[in-house]
Image 1 (cartoon, rainbow over the protein chains, first blue to last red):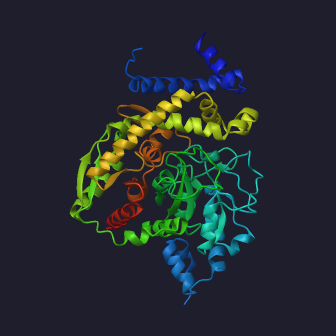
Image 2: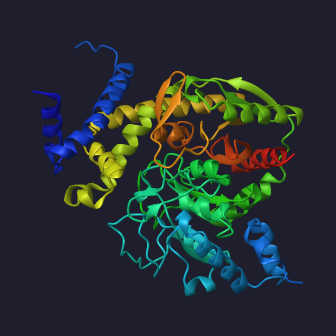
Length: 51
Length: 431
């Protein structure tokens, strides 16, 4: 699955109606968002939990 | 003796009120003088709904985001272009009760969701100091109106810096009070946990007077009893404060030196957690704004301008778990800010790292790399929306004819000390 396909699937799941041009316009912001959130997730990762 | 109207349109609110009380000018004469100036400066795009006949009975203004009974309130959008509220926003009611005359509705970034006031539906607002440049936003029209002498004072909203940024870029005072101090009932929401309302004015005194009228409190009266000598002032020295335009940095250093000479204890402080404000604000605001616009962004995406549409669509993709992560980081940032205020009474930093950019400019070029203009403009203001502490922007000097804004930040509900230090900085700036 390409990055574009993943974004298209995510927008459909969110109930958005996007054209191909809309998807292209949204993609840079989405990529930046994912990168920033990944940093946040890594910083706030819970300590390993043992069962 | 009649006061000269031309000087009164540029005068602070306190002076205008005094002239009205002395009957040196009548309210109708004053409103007519403002109206005449508004017509002459239509190219600034300060107003969406200019004052009409009704304004001759009213003399202060509210941003378009605040509902006013019987007056079209668009929030700078196409979607609400015909909305006429059936009731006043609470802050409008309080201004009326204080005897204020409400006057027109100003331009803003669409739905207050941006910091340039380049509004696709109501016109690209222009900086009165240089019409080639942006006034900032989202409350751009309010700052223009104050600086260009189109009203005595204005109201704005601030979700990531929307009062303080235009105040800084246009050269007026802007106060974002403590979160929750001023009720937002009747205001079109953007981000529920980040939204604030506050005044934009020509002087710190005016901001204090208006804040007390809006809050029903006594912060300005208390500010006049605050002894500033000996107060501890922290200068932030973290990566979030860098880079700065050299001229902005120079003004900050001059202000710090002037405060030291005046007996305040200025020292460097560090708040490394602030490095996380960009992502924390991004996730929080994208999610909250998208929730506020959940129906319209799905049903009528073309009714939004391109930049706001993309922000709202991105917000619809924010996962609940990511929002929770952002709130965890927000709690850490808030805790760090609380810790800093154990050591200092006030934080001092620039409001914006740059002076007014050109209209349409998208990127700031630093020696270390490029930064989006909108990101640079909120870099030093958004941390205080996340934490909810009071923050005041005051003009302090110029760089190449463009105003520089400095930001005074205080503890929660300590507007009195923020206003007192702000008034001192204002006095030092004029020396």
